[in-house]
Figure 1 (spheres, one colour):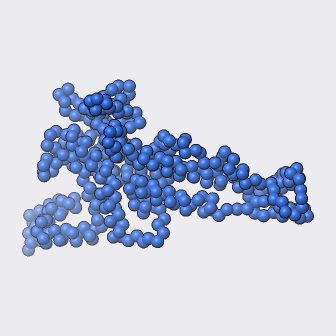
Figure 2 (tube, rainbow, N blue to C red):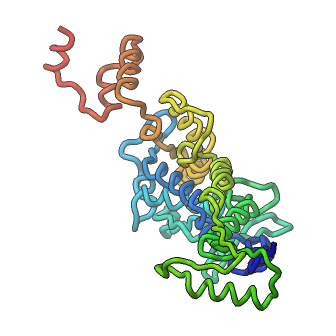
Figure 3 (cartoon, helix red, strand yellow):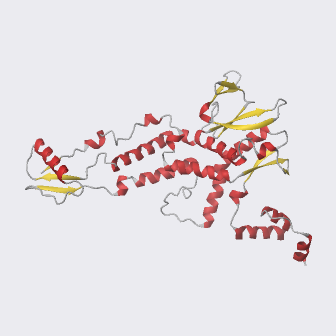
Length: 364
């Protein structure tokens, strides 16, 4: 029996579906990495969390209300929320964020502009260890540009972000996605094979194949085969074509890389069950061990810019707020134990203090 006209090596040599060499992704950019839906999802989760936060100003243990204008609106032309999100995005995508500091003639900070991290180049003097920054063709000192780093490497002027740290793994995932797409688009696996029980030449094989392809397109009707010739449909399961198991593994890798629970990445988790209690615990762990890496860097940098004695601190209530029943039970415990008053609880819930008449009715 002779098989024709398919050659397995076509799958390997077809440039439309061969995974690109990893060397092509040595300098993997955030835009390339976001071609993976898992990376886009991870970055989206971080930015969504950042959008829910506000920054307060403290002097010692005293909350400053209202906070200084630089805290309320670090950038004159934008909102506090947008400033936070742009900084977190820069750190997540590049591992570095840069603020251009604009000062009044007497030295007061007027506004902070979040610069595109790709357009800023830090350079450290090997002798003095002083770092200057090049941006827009000009050189700025560390007093004019504030540099934030996600992961600090000793002796390196620049920080390291998750995309840069795992660029080879991400490049492999991108290559796999392209390879799977090439297969689906008809890159190298035929829809079927013709076999013959007779010995045939290469020319006869080509003629039979061409005749089959010409007569058996969509809507061509019934096929008629010669003596000893058979047609066998060749197909792959969807999970085989898309390499679903490998792609699911890539999603969990990206979740681990960015420090985000796989549940939030909408990744299938076999053999596990999610309950309200452990979901809350996962969210808390993400705030403590992932998000705080970004927020603490922002708090520290902003506190250094604010007047001496003033500290910037994120208000995490929006992320740590529990469900209504659990929250009210915690309030009741605080009131019964004597370390919370009703008015303090109402302030936590965003309500006005009780009037004198309302207090008398409750205490009656």
